[in-house]
Length: 107
Length: 100
Image (cartoon, rainbow over all chains, first blue to last red; front, side):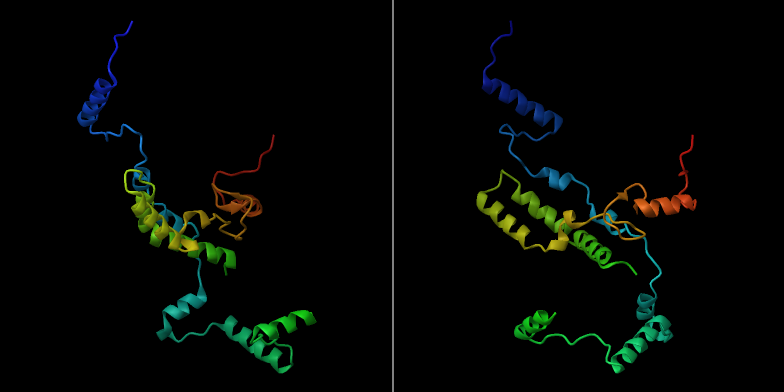
């Protein structure tokens, strides 16, 4: 049969063990938030998930001194102008809340 | 051109990276029971001021090829259909069609 050991003796033993093995002494098991500091940072790996794609507008914006033209974009803008001339452009944006309500009712 | 959802996801990823260390510091203070309740409460209020695109839970691994959010096979980062197309085209090393 095990001999009775007082709780204060057990606590002292635990404290001594903590100092010996360099672990933190936390008798009440309080949350210290250490896990948020211990965890690895996830951001750097997250940013690299999507592979870089060849983006023409971005490159043109980056190297403005090349004075190159994005043909597809130019053609699209010309098409939009043509459509506007024929009265087939996008509808006007509502300027106020009241106007917006009127436009939605018509639909 | 990636879809709007993919662009939003990329934005979230950059936001997470930029704010991760500050968020961790506030989390540490807010969840630390050895600190005073006032300090912890202030840290929690600061955490609440961070925007939507700074939380790691807003990041979703979408299909790299098509931007689809569901049915993404995580080993390849591809949605199930893009995975099939690429596998049949022989673009995924070590993947071949089952036959017995």
